[in-house]
Every structure is written in C-alpha cells, then in structure tokens.
Image 1 (cartoon, rainbow, N blue to C red):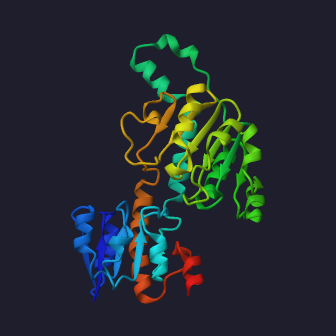
Image 2 (image 1 turned 30 degrees about the vertical axis):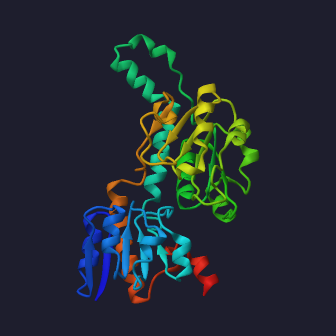
Image 3 (image 1 turned 60 degrees about the vertical axis):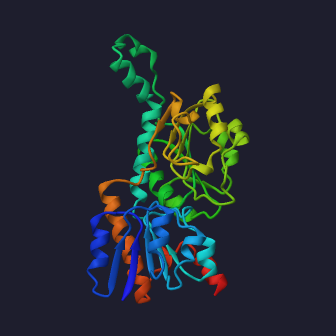
Length: 324
C-alpha cells in the first residue's frame, strides 16, 4: 500500500484518480501549515502539492518518499535541489494550464491597452464627460516581445499574431523551426529588442538566472509608454523598479498576476498603483485547466509508482540524470 498526501484540495478528478486504485491510501491535509505537514509527511510515498511550501526539513521527514507532484509548472515552493540530491522526481502538470495562462495574458494586454480600469471607474463615478480623455493603444501593428518561448509563449505567440501584432520571441533555448512555422521572429537575447517593443510579456521560470531579469536597466531600455505583463513569477521583476517606472510614465501600464511575496500587502506599490491590472496568482485557474492539472498531478504520482513516468513531466530531470 502506497500512502499519498494531498497538501491542498484540488479538483475532485485528482482525488478520484488516486482513490480509484485500491493500492493507494490518500491522506488530505486539513490545512497546509508547517505543523500539519510535519505531522502528516512521515511515512508517505507521494505528495501532491499546489501552493503549500515544501521545505527540505519537511521533505526529510519521510524516508519512503518516491515522488512530489506539483499541481502546476512552477516549483519554487518545493526544495527541488534537496529532492534531486535524493534522486526523487519532482513532477509538473506539463501543458495542463498553458493555454489558460496565454489567454489570461491577452486579457491583461487588452485591458491595459484600453485602460479599462480607469474607464470603468469613470462610468461608475458618473463621469461620462471623460469619454474623450481615453485613447486606446492598438494591438494591431504593434510589437510584442515574448520573453520565454516555452509552453505558454508558444501558445501566446499565435494569439498575438491573430491581432495583427509583430511578434518577437526570445529564449536561450529556441525552437527556431516552430518560430518559423508560427511566422514570428526568434532571438536568444531579449534585451536588444526592448527599445522598440510596445508590449513585453514574461513567461520564464524563476531561478538564479532569472531573478530580477527585469530590473532598472531593462526598464530604462524599454520604449516610453511600454506595457509590461508578468504572468511568470514575482521575483522575475524588480517590483520597486517597476513601480518607479510606472510613476514616471516610462511604463504606461503593468499586468501583474504574481508577486515576490504572496499575498502582497495592501500598501504594496503595485497594488495601489492606478495603472496596474492585477490578479491573485490565478492565471491558470479556468475550469478546464484546473481539471486537467488535477488529473495530471495524480497520474504523475501513479506513473511514478508504476515505473512509467514520462520524462517531460519531470521538472528536475537533468539533475536526476546527472546525479544518476
């Protein structure tokens, strides 16, 4: 009998996928506090995690641990290096929510281009007279720079093309054949493209190489009036520098789904700023994507137990191969 801990409640299909097996004992945490997890982790063989923080100290509590399966694709809430040192796979729900995040990005892009927050408030305030103060920023014939050409970036690019945008994708590991098929220009270094990009959208993982990837220098290099979208991870952007760029007008608007510290405080400069469109880190939360992610999260655990886990589902695959 394998014991699986679910640190967070997910779509019922995830629970059902695990509970359909008579060789699986499913334990659902009543909350994801460190104290609760420390009590439940000893003896578990698998962990399904969404937002809970799995530190090295917590993961070390189970000598029987075989897999941690993340409900999503970012793993900054998991001690991945420690898991790799134990030769234990950290799985992701690869591709389950990519289209949802791409659509979420377009939503933010359109909202900021049309200044919908201010327009909505004007109507609510009875200020119909302000209708001529607003001028939309066209997506058509504008340039969008997509930083990160992974699962999300590859779905976002054709959406932008459909609006008649000039699309440039940037990634250190480019699929140039796919870029050519999509009719987009591909570059390895995004920085030279900042000067004439009307929109910049970030879709990279957070690690040592991408922390504050967008800082004061990158913001200064951007075109005046640029719109910046961050649906990646909060730490990818220097939030203080972005707030200053919004204050100065260098950045006309920012779409922010993720923050360095979550939840952000009420006085966070990006939360208070009138030219931001915000979401509570739920860009992947559509009905279809939540169901798909839950099913994949559970299936990755079962596939690990059964010895048939697919390489593309393993976040720390390179480290496991190097260590093995």
